[in-house]
Amino acid sequence: MLPVRRQLPPAGPAVRQRALAALLLGALSLIGLMLGLGNVHRGIYVAVLTLLFAAAAIWLGITASKKARRSGTARPRWAVSGVVLGGLGLGLSALWLLVLAVFWPQLSTYYNCMSGANTVAAQQACHNQFTNSVGNEISLLQNGRLRPGASRLDIRVGGLGRSVLRTS
Image 1 (cartoon, rainbow, N blue to C red):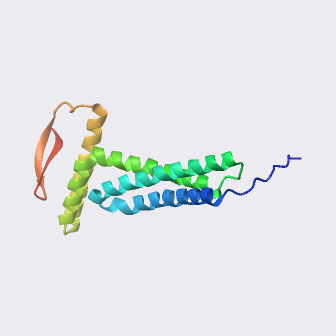
Image 2: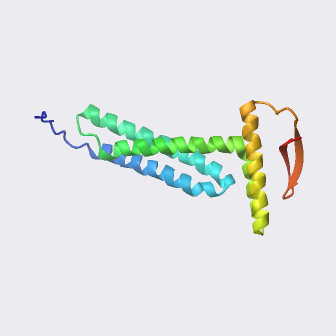
Image 3: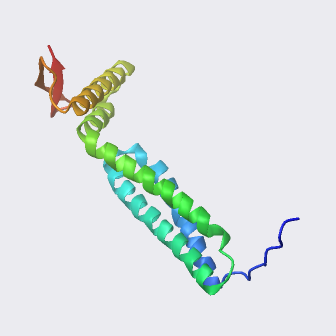
């Protein structure tokens, strides 16, 4: 037979509100991240904002749990959920900011190219250019230097100067 656990009294209203705020901020960080990925320029601001929301959710959830433990009351049911959602939001926001930092020129050129592409063929050309450019950037990051026989080539896309890696 399992030992009977003593039922703890519920946490106070302030602690429950803190836990609920953690849950809402954690969910808001994930929702904001999903909605902000459509535009690269807006995506930077959205990712930073969702990063802050996620950090606040984690802090609020942890402090709600600590306050409940110190006062000898039950942990609010939303505290752990707020920490988990905040952790997911924090990780995904940080990952998106890292992707933006590494691939900013490629993403910016791609979005500018797609905004001027009026036909399916032009959109496909933008996609092919983006894929090649990202592939070259990844190989450059893996090797840490230019590959033998590779040189920089400047091209014009949509009126913007762009430097890409070209192999001979």
